[in-house]
Image (tube, rainbow, N blue to C red; front, side, top):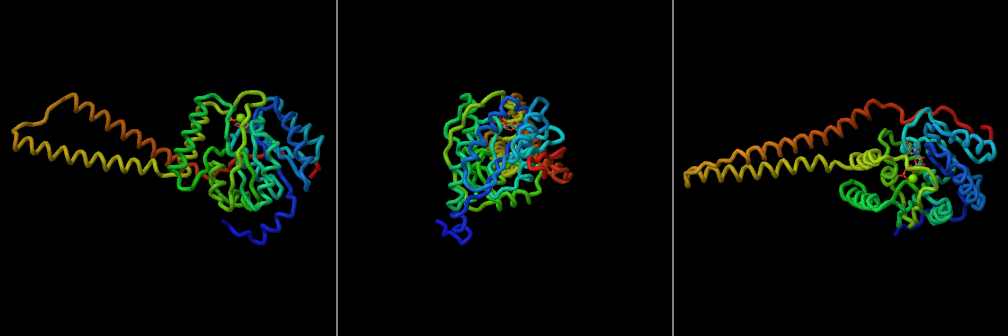
Amino acid sequence: MHLPTEGQEERTAQSPRVSVAVPLYNEESNVEELVRRVTLVLDALPGGPHELVLVDDGSIDGTRRLMEQASARDARIVSVFLSRNFGHQPALSAALDHVRGEVVVLMDGDLQDRPEEIPRFVEKFREGNDVVYAKRERRKESMWLRAAYWTYYRMLARVSNISFPLDAGDFGLMSRRVVDEIRRIPERNRYLRGLRVWAGFRQVGVSVERDARYSGESKYSFWRLVALGLDGVFSFSIVPIRAATLLGMGAMGLTLLFVLYAIYARVALDRSPQGFTALLVVIAFVSGVLLFFLGVIGEYVGRIYEEVRGRPIYVVERVVRGDGE
Ligand code: UDP
Ligand code: MG
């Protein structure tokens, strides 16, 4: 499809320096296993020096201590501590601001994303791709959650103004130039898997299995998951506003028809329409629709407010680099 440019040919020969970036929020039961498996993979990867960037998102359990120990033990492990819990997507942004590799792999800290997939991603990168994202083939989550994810990604792909790949999460590899483009985006509302598509370049999906959590519980409550889902829709689509326009137009059309009928009934049949119940139903329905779309507009207004305030996305308390930098 694309002819390789000079830069891409050059890339085939080299072994890039890989940064693996992981956000952690109260993951004390996963940190050690995570570090063990990731460093094993990095040991076997040609090139380097590779690094593992752990971002603590304001954990209140033993996660911070374990991270410090890991950084002290292994010079390749960088620990970034945020000043409080900012959320998964802000923590990922913090990670992107601290990585130094030529390619960056984002993954979760609960080992749902298998570190052993990283060499496959790097291989795809060397073939000339700038983004290699994991397509989640088989999820090991509850059935209703899987169904919700399935529906959501298909709906998002339809309404958004960029072409979203289906079933792709944050797990994946990005080249340095993609990371730099994403870092240039000033949006506070960071839906990274969307911004990654937005950045463009050559993107390719790799099928992976999504494991169950190694240990601990999901940090996404139902409502946080819904909020993340809404972020995806509202950040990449104005279809909800258009829906209001269309619905309004439809209602006006129907009303016009009804008015014509009412005049006809009065003049030709000498009958005026009546019905208290019908009236009540129509009023209640229309107020519901109005309130609903007021809410939709409110979502956008709230997001505009967040953007113009321009607060930083996260605050760093401390960075520990194993090599003493
Ligand atoms: N996470 C985070 N901050 C949060 C919530 C989650 O850094 O406020 C991290 C969490 O530690 C994990 C990753 O984001 O490494 C994904 O979270 P989780 O596994 O809970 O989400 P799920 O896989 O259930 O969608
Ligand atoms: Mg998880």
